[in-house]
Amino acid sequence: MTVRRHKKLSLHKLIPNMITLAALASGMSSVKFAIAGKWEMAVIAIVAASFMDAFDGAAARLLKATSALGAELDSLSDFVSFGISPAIVLYLWSMQDIGRWGWFIALVYAMALALRLARFNVAKAEDDPDNPLNHYFTGVPSPVAALLCLLPMTVSFMLDDHAPAFAPLLRAPEVTGFWSLVAAGLAVSHIPTFSSKQIRIPERMKVPALGAFGLLIAGLINDPWPTLTLMGLVYLALLPFGVVHYGRKEKALAAGVTEPDDADGDD
Image (tube, rainbow, N blue to C red; front, side, top):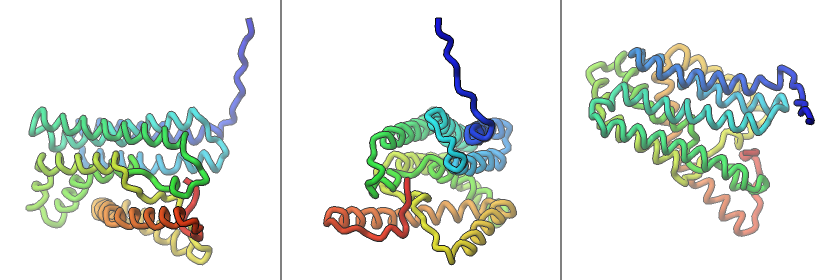
């Protein structure tokens, strides 16, 4: 009988998977906070999971630790953190007031995110990496869909501080239910959306870009609800520009014209 020997891995090769598991734990913890009625902490836990989700892939590439295991683990973590957790949090916060219909909407959102992730995994395996049209996301990415789904909560928390009389309106199950379906629809849509990996920052703009990122982090720490609300609204406003940019590039490729790749990177 042959004993199979497994290759040993150095610790730094496991760091991306550790970040992914931390994101999963953060997403699951949001459900615990929601059960305890700690709504703000529930949202913060999902926001933290979205940041960790952005960093695990970058860490894997930086440390040259990409693997099939890491890719599968990342997809499972995304489904828990951005599919199941937001659905349960919103259901407990608002939609349970309409009984079975509230749970139905929560199930629709979770299933939409599962379909979105499955489609992404299949497309990633089949797409031609040299085709610049494959550098766009199809539909809204799962972390963004989760944050958009939670937008009624972030706006409500913001209004609690500035206009408390209007905050209860956003907790109405009709509002949260409708908006959950909108977020689910954006996730499974075929709308081309920008990938952050497309952005190429000129050398002279690196310091201002770092400054803008620092301001964003400062805003999230000091005044998270207006900052998250603004981020969500800006992203929604940019969706038409992604469609226009994709259409322009598609026409250029059909005409055999190669555009300068100043704003596009690897997916």
